[in-house]
Image (cartoon, rainbow, N blue to C red):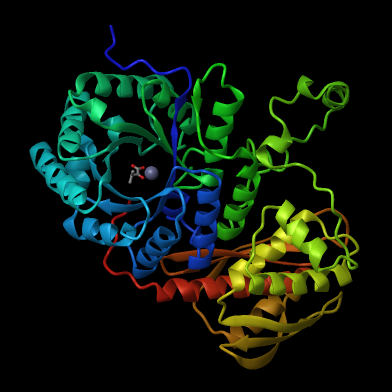
Length: 521
Ligand code: KIV
Ligand code: ZN
């Protein structure tokens, strides 16, 4: 008979969001400080239990972000990641010190393949490291999480020995990640059951799942781990993260809510904020959400085929297992246009769950008025794009002042571009093989740089020929990759904004000098 403690009728499962750490560390997903603060505030408001805000030793920028998120935290525990290295742990402790509730999350590899080739340490040496580093973290904070990196490829006996050592040294949460996305649900569940059964002090810690999606099994594995006794799920908004990403928070939360009959666990997440969170993270990271993505994809609640539409018109439950409103997709009532005043605009922002400071409101309202002059109807998506643009460009050193382009059948196309560079106005004319090329050549002439253009993509924010174009640009400068977006009813202006935004991000990233070489986690 299993010695795993019986679960109550509906057990509370903690949601640990790592969008700002595991999510942000994937190529091209870099966020600015303002973007990180906005994401953290939203996560805190929506009821996420733990926010992993970053990896403080990685750079001064990461440290500042974790410290500032900690200072501003309202309800959530704020975690900082640390390798099993004393300097990392001290830095993480310093960063989370200001949180109402701070956590140090320290990890070390436990699998034979990592020990032999990455750590070059024996099993005994790693156990010694666990004992020392977890105890050091526990001296700094009450709340310590320890992770066995590559747990799913670790022998069970050794994994149990490490877990027992970590709990003995003071770890309050034990995370057993599927770092390489290799496990199957049955294996992952069995691992939790076995570890919790075998480790004598297992009941002194909360067990946690952390699943990568290399085989598309991250959600199934996370839920299986919970059935095996884990009570914390580590996940990211939109499932962003290393390689194929992490388990998606919105999918976990809605699976638990929608299938409460089969999965008797509850979370504290306000599900009506999921759509907003998805859009915010997508804009901040410039990672588009695939159209057919569960819960938050553009088509997740769209019914196209005749049979489905017929069923939906007769009774929504024929083809709908959850309502759009439950994830925050309710249709709003106010249609905005050029006659809408401040009060209506403020009320629309409220409906969309967008809360701005007075300065931000003023800037976004002016952008809205300018847009409404050019576009009959301003849709919710347009307003969200304006707010996100305000957020992304608040501290930009390079700003677009004006652009005019001569285009048409007889080239070369010519762009005249005026920029404000650290407050100075500069102008350039450039030709190109097409109007976008001319605009980008003008940018290159005014802001010389080595970065190469890796991606240029355009899509319409809404329908209609007067829709705003949203342009994504990805630049690579040495090891650093950034992606940025720009929106405008004129595709060429949107292109210039996106390119400049990417250059601003590269400049900001360069300022965040590495404090020391971060581990590749
Ligand atoms: O995937 C992983 O193993 C991690 C650890 C640092 C928890 O992200
Ligand atoms: Zn991970």
